[in-house]
Image (cartoon, rainbow, N blue to C red):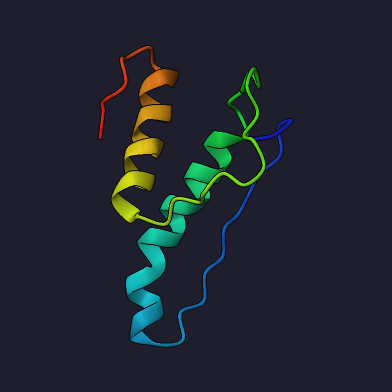
Length: 78
């Protein structure tokens, strides 16, 4: 995958909760790898004191909008 080498993901599930989380972990690994390929243009930095968004639906919408921008689609408003 990288420079002709092979990557292996090894997962050890020790209980049922871990087994149920395995697809989510794989999705996070794929998303993390995808984000390493995205180049952001930092025109406006976030000013200090900006509130952090902890709402899952808003975070998911932000992530969808970033992925939509990567393929050239318009963003959706929340």
